[in-house]
Length: 115
Length: 109
Image (cartoon, rainbow over the protein chains, first blue to last red):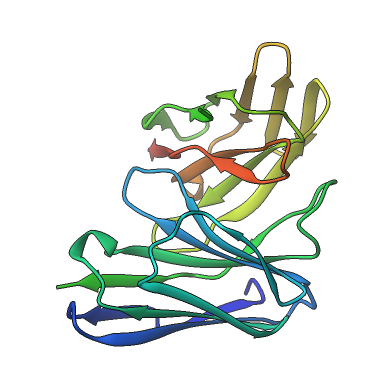
């Protein structure tokens, strides 16, 4: 039990659908992250929120829209996705996105398949 | 550009020792992390190095040479449960984590 939960664990959607991924952390952390993990590729950082404010947006297409209503919850809204967006989407949290042994704690991920 | 290189896959025998290498080229350096990820599960933190040298934690050790842009993760007394992917990540000058693609470690009896 890592303290970071994600729902749903699996999602199949068509290219015209709209869906949302949810992440919740029970660790009292201030920073939350969305990553994309594709097979045999490095983790790709998508978004970073620190104290509910978005601090990073790594050139992610607008069909991915994050929302962070409070420091414990993070959403990723999906619309008009492409088949190449099929991947494992990981949420993570950390105390602060700064220096020191600032460890990120990951959720189990949502396995997304876009048809 | 920034780059992290690690072998795609390694195989080792139960009870043996294995060393997983990681080389990096990043804009600045603020620490190197190793994470373990079992299939279908979340990555979990293993170790952190920011100074040169060896950090030992039970059966796992991690080494760093900043001048060479090189790290390794050493796993001793391998167990079947060590079969997993091992991810190397470097924190750059912007305190952003740059990730390697991971090394899939297969342990055979």
